[in-house]
Amino acid sequence: MEIDEPAERLPVPGPVDARLGARLAELRSGRGWSLGELAERSGVSRSTLSRAERAETSPTAALLNRLCHVYGRTMSQLLSEIETEPAPLVRAGEQTVWEDRASGFVRRSVSPPHTGLRGELVEARLAPGADIAYDRPPVPGLEQHIWVLDGVLDVAAQDAEYHLRAGDCLRLRVWGPTRFRCPGPARARYVLAVVRP
Image 1 (cartoon, rainbow, N blue to C red):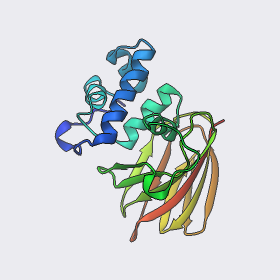
Image 2: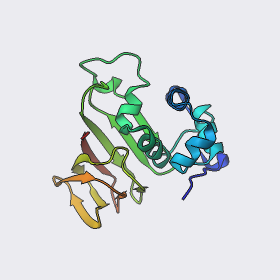
Image 3: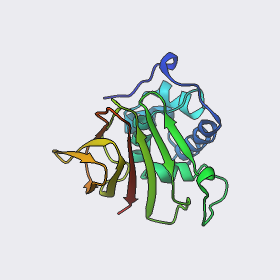
């Protein structure tokens, strides 16, 4: 299934989107791919890819997940690559926050960014009713630890479904599609520990 996001439904891009678009264009160019070649590899339409690279749109989590898969990166790796200089300490107010406003997903990169490390921590929030499906992992065999801090989170992976409440922690290796859903009534807030294989 090809992703094509109509421009009129997408949120207005911000400064992070401009840096992200430039990085996506660099990654494609570095591999010598045309927009058409990337569209074939990712299943994302050429027009959506072009708008994302030119920062005319704020990409969704699903779109970034597909591109991360093609480029062999986690989403945190990709987002850390648009930061200016890696640091050993990142204060709470300086942590990169990215929001997929279309789905009600907010993602905070808690770990100090560094491309050479395999592990990272992410704080995620899903609004009540939010439902995010990823058709593939950004990196096959990615290890995830999902620790719910507040609310309820439903996770589907490897033909199994998990209903997680505050305090619960799920560990899995991701090889195929996954789905994260907040059934409500309150938002779900969870920590995602990601370890690259």
